[in-house]
Image (cartoon, rainbow, N blue to C red):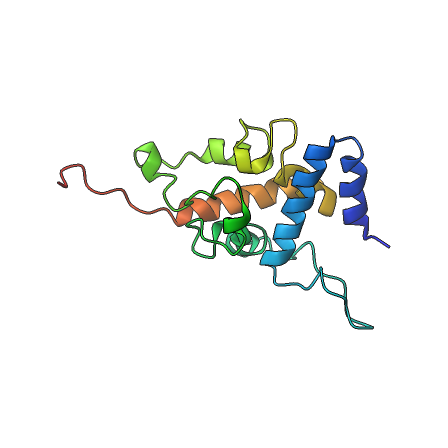
Length: 168
């Protein structure tokens, strides 16, 4: 038996190719690994199914639950599943520094939601990862966009300051 949210993701997946399905399954598996669940192990009788959607809409909480397994608790690309990825996860604390000090909010929103130019780790532009997963796990209108916006706001808040221009 699957939960309604998982069923929606699987139904959406029926229209995807095999590569897209593997990417979505990997993203869900990494999310579960990052959440510290035992989804791949047998559950004891009466033990609850793993949680796929957290109640908190706080950006830090969302980041820790959905992103830290790859990008690390410190957002520097050192999560527990990072070594298994073909493309190393980005250091998300350096996004602004890499753009001359300005946090690229709209670009990051587009990438996280799947509307922007794809990054190798997040699938092709035909298969955005987090947008469809958030919509599939929680079908309430606008909640997927709120989750993405809150994660991106959290990322903006943890940016490393670039060195002063006159620093040698």
